[in-house]
Image (cartoon, rainbow, N blue to C red; front, side, top):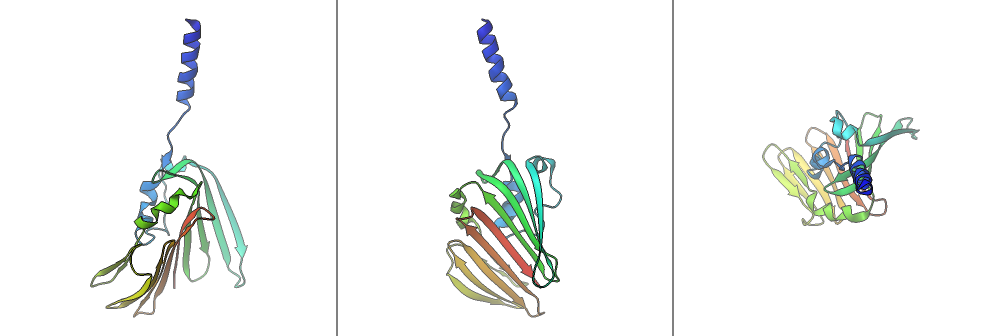
Length: 190
């Protein structure tokens, strides 16, 4: 009888310290549409996401132009994106006039590659929109009033360059990097 009680207490005790993974999908899902909020993903995080960050590291490196490349890495514990295990989140920025941001999700394995078809780019203008999906042609140009969109679409991501009549240019890159187990969105406007 005492053995059953002690055994039951051990199981109960172990259960109390087990916790569910933090699902980052709601926070990161906007990246599926045109790399969404890559500039603001790690802004004001709800407490449940903050609790899954076990360490934050920052590295600054001077480049040839005298600017700083800044990489901030958020190391995660028990975290997922669409049910796939996440190891870290990274933000890369550059302190120049060019608005630049690279946001990466670092996975623990390569299963994230199956997510590629669910990521797309929507070129929006005043008169409409054109959607670039994984099954669109490999490259092309879309023109609408006020913008020109040039894109290359591949099995591992896309490259999109948007030029406006006002002289503004923005580039967006989505990359599924199997070797480094990363899914990244790069955005630069200037």
